[in-house]
Structures are given as structure tokens and as C-alpha cells.
Image 1: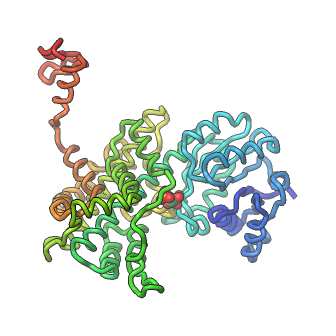
Image 2: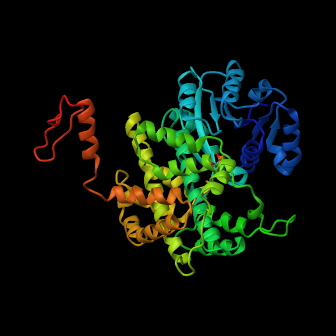
Length: 469
Ligand code: 6PG
């Protein structure tokens, strides 16, 4: 039987959920996993869907079960395992067959794999939404040869999340475009999470609020402009009671955040592109810093007392909400700005409105605001989101709150690196005459690098200090 629409290799949490999702949407799917126990496990969980799932005992059996041109979705850990799997499948495939990498690959790896794929095609597919999303509707960001996308688009659009009926799956460009966009998605995810954590810190340490009370505030925020998956789960997390201690679960969780690298890649690529994403960079740095628990404890012992309470009434939750709104707008302006910069640098513009559209449902950063961002980017993809009328208005109504919150945090020893970076970015981006004239003069002084003059527009000018450096 060679009539399966697609094969799935790797039946970990995400792979198994995607295989079930594919079968659920009516497509026969062949599955293979290195350790057969996972295949058995999937089949035992599949119920009626098992009729559309073909378990394969070997990669060759998987390939034999697929219709041509074949399509195989790899759901194996990013890195060398992907290369190994491609190498193992390669001799079994024919020209025109497609391998999809659904992991969180570094887009440079995807570019390299695509370039070396010969007559088969590699599609780099960013999949967001965790296990729940994979099973019932993820956001899918694809890149690679367009004909390969056309081969798999019916399956990928069928399994994707839907926003008002529109599938959150799209082809975004050649090579590693899909994985690049997924990387930036994750950078924004880090920043969104960090800013939410900073708001939590202000309420916990500044206002002395209990986790349950904080959860109720997030719950309320989730009915307004900040409505989003991350705010929703924050409310749920903050309200969760620990069975062992009887207190809030949050209070017994170690304050050191893990990371698998995608946020860091966003910061690294932003630097390569000279695209300013300071909120994301601050969020990545904050995760790194969170891991240094011993050093933080030593710092508190040396320089205590750490965060200090804020006077009652000085920090109304509404103000904090507006500060978070400002931070979020600024963060997304940076993230989309980075995607635009990448398109320009790679000579292959990335479709910003489409990116915003496929982030509206299914993915971790899905939010009400993304709907408005999609509309703003559709009007003018080249304009910074900060300047789109809807978001400019939002910033006019919230940037002063961001300033108040960041000031208050600074005065009370409460660390808010991402919100602070957002404020600094905002102030820099509304300063027509900055201070880099001094940097240029210094560069010219010690290195004769030259500067341009404001008055006559001439470039390559030097100061009278030539020779002093
Ligand atoms: C998603 C997520 C997911 C990511 C986790 C953990 O879009 O579904 O981004 O792909 O793996 O969020 O990432 P970190 O371990 O780096 O926090």
C-alpha cells in the first residue's frame, strides 16, 4: 500500500501529536520512530484514528507506504539528528520527494541542508503551539522550494490553527525563511514572557501581592488589549495551588529559566543584521542571568536589601497594564523590524502581513494585538508598527505609564530589564537629533574614520585633530 499522504519520523511529544492531527484531518499517515515502543504507544492512543495511521517498522517501510512525490516530516531534535535522518532517508528517495524539518532548526542549517539536497527538496517548517497546538492546530511557518510547499500545503493548512476560518500556515520564502521567522517568533516569545514576569515581580515584590491575587490581575488583563495566550496561562499558573505545600505553586518553583537556544539565535541574528531588538536581547540576557542563582544570592548579601516595597497607591495595576501594553508594542515593532531587515539583507523580502496573520492563532505568542498588527502591516509593511496609527495611539496612551513603572522599579531596586529596554528604545526612536555625532567625532579623532556634516551634507570630513590621535 503506497497511498499515505505523508510520513512522520520521530514520535516524541510533538511528532506523535502532529501524526494524530494529520490523521484526524482525514489524511492517511505513515509513522516511524527509531525506538519502536513509541510507534506502539501512538497506535494504542490513536483509537479510531488508527485506521488512517500506518506504523512502519523501518525507514524503507515508511517510504514504501507513501504516495509520490513523497513527503516526510521529520520531528527529531534540532541539530545533528536532522542531518543523520536526512542522510538515512536520502538513498530511499527519488527526485521531487520532499523532506520537511519540523523542529526548531537554526535557519542557517536549513539553508545549508536545502543547498545540499540535490534533487530532493528540503522544507524548513517552524511549528509553534506546544503539544496542544500540534494535536489540534499549530501555527506553521514554512520555507523552501515553492513546488515542495505546494505538494504539502493541503496537509499543513488542514492541520493548522484557524483564525476566523483562515489557516495559520503559510509559505514565507526560500531556504530557511520558515525557520528564520520561527526563530524571531521565539525571540518575541522570550520578550513577551520576560515582560510579563517583570510585571509579576513588580506586583509580588513591589506591592507585596500573593500569587493568587496576581493571577486575578492577569485574568482581568486578559479581557483587554493584552488578551493573549501567554497572559491567559500566566493567570492560570499564578492561581495554581501546590498539592505538596498547600501554597501557591509559583512560590516553590526555582527562579532559573531554561532555554534551548532560539531566543539567543534571535539576538545573534539581530546583531548580524544590525537590526535593533533591545527588548528581545534584554529578555535573553535575563534568562542567562536567572540561571546564576548563586551569584545573585551573593550580590544580595553584599549589596542588599534587593527589591523594596512600593508605597501603596504608587503603582495601580492599570498603570502596570498600560506599561505592559507599551512594552509589547515596542517589542513587536522590533521583531517585525528585524524580519523586514532580514528580507532586505537576504534579497528575498519576507511577507510581514502574512507572518502576522499566521501568528494570530495556534502559536505561543498568539494575541488579540496580532490581529491589529496584521491589519497595520497589510496597510504598509515598510512602516514601523510604532508609527501605524492604531499603535501610535496606543503608545501615546501608554508610554508615560511605562516611564512611571520603569522609574518606580529603578527607585525600588526591582529589576525590569525588558521594560527598561523598551522605554530606552522608545525614547531613542523619538529623538530626531541623537548623540552619535560625538561617537563619529571620537572615531574620527582616533581613527580618521571621517564624518558627514549636517550643514552642507558633505561626507568623509575630518576634524582639526587629524594627527593628534
Ligand atoms: C513554540 C515554542 C517552542 C519552544 C518552547 C521552549 O513556539 O511552540 O517556541 O518551539 O521550544 O517554547 O523554548 P525554550 O526552551 O527556548 O524556552
